[in-house]
Length: 119
Image (cartoon, rainbow, N blue to C red):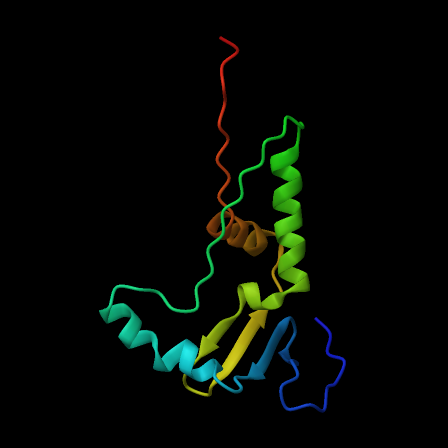
């Protein structure tokens, strides 16, 4: 992870090898912590993004390619894999090793292959 403006208060800083952190800013604390209780009471999740895509394609290896693209997106958009800490109002990102990246992939990427018979 790199930061173009390391002296900026919202910039990511490496706090230990492979562990990056930055302060929560603006409305982020509200969305991460302040609204959590209300959302749980009402049975909703706030600040969670779900997406579904249906691809009609017969390309071999498409599933593998999509998984690789999802892993690459994690590096380009680290917010996909950050955690928030209410104790010090910070976001944390840990650069994954191969095993933790595969665990993250299994938790966040769900591929369902529909097979149609030739009948």
